[in-house]
Image 1 (cartoon, rainbow, N blue to C red):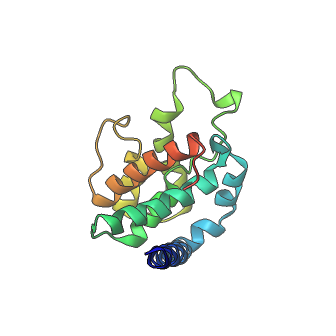
Image 2: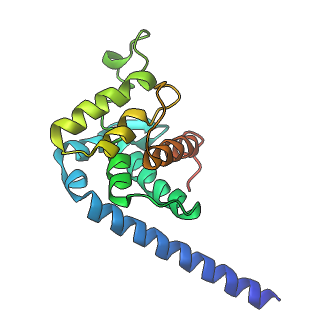
Image 3: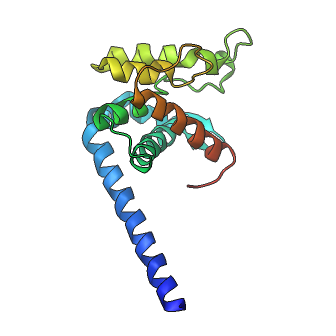
Length: 170
């Protein structure tokens, strides 16, 4: 009994490692231009939740978006899902800085528009990628996402944000 449990556990761990490797490869392939861009590299300097950088957060959201689509067996356009996830918080400032704190312009409501403006300035985006970026803060953005990919990134972003804020590594 014990040997069988140990073997199943090892198999599950190996499968998880392999899936993680596959997701990293897919993210690198679909988002190479984004990941290598100077501005995306600068997101390593901005904190998002707790001690997690915007850079790490966006990659985590891309990974969890892929995981969610796979787990729920939802057919998606993976390239657009990944690119939208990587750019969903492409607002390019540290929202904790005093110059960006404004009680009349709450970051959560307004950063999707800023991220979309920045992303369209530096990258050619599909309509689906734009929807992901524009609507990822739904219901705060009021208008719901139009495509599956945007719904998935919206859900993954909420989940990853919760894990990061509570400092739960997943």
